[in-house]
Amino acid sequence: MIYASQLVDQAASLRDASHAHFATTNMVVTLFGRRGRGKQESRSSNSSVKPAVAPDREVKNEETTSTLGVILSSFGLSTLTGVTEEIVFRGYIQAFLLAITHSPGMAWLGQAILFGAGHIHPSAQEGENRVVAATQTFNALFGYGLVYALTGGDLWPCIVAHVLYDMHVLVSSWHNVNCQMDWTEDAIQEKVSEDDVTSLRKLKELVGPSLTSDTLNMCRRFFYAFDEDHKHALSLPNVQRAMSYAFLTDNKKPSTTQVEHLFAKVLEERQCDDVKPNDGRISLSEFLQMLFSLRAQTLKIATSA
Image (cartoon, rainbow, N blue to C red; front, top):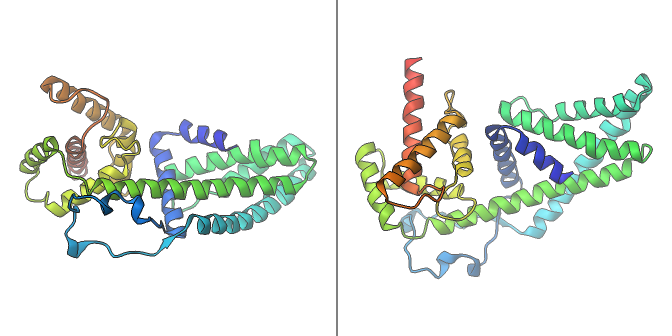
């Protein structure tokens, strides 16, 4: 069921799946907070490289959560939601639909549709709701609802499956986002390469005084937050997710096709200049060039509308 849900996410548009992913990561960080890091885990603790921020601006030690604490909390939350939702949607709704339609197939399909619709949130992004509703409908069809039908209406297997699935989503999402946050914190303390320094200097001349040191540090943090492969460079899927987040609250957003074409243009220009090999990834300076270019295009469209 976990693998099948991942296929549903992949079948959705990249932007819709990104919105659902952002919502999930924000939820788990809000619920459980940051994971504690031992001194031996941080590359910066023994590094001779100076931090990217001034000492007087360093973030104070925040409260952290242990993995065991997250597992226990996830178990409690998953048990509460699993028991409640299975009693309502399988114990009552599916049984009720079966009683009035006398069709196991209609009851099975009806409870899945209602289960998916029940996970739509009015304040969520439209794309997020599409992915979440599709995923939960799929789970109710080929997961909980199918188990309920095959076991002759036994709720306990459904509850166990529901609890395990929710725990997996919560714990794995929290673990993955913390690993990425740890990588980001380590990466921004590394020295910027000479090539990037030169490129960023040229970019600053084009952008103007708005690209301050603080803005650049924030941009570096944003860049590495989406460097999911830890390559110090972003692939096209990484860039698509980053742009989805960068323009999340904007009325005018660049399309995925625009992002893809601009990404290809950056790689083509690099190949013509014979600066770097075309490895299908872009550097920090190239990413910022894309970001500012797309921002300028959307502002131009917004002002002319």
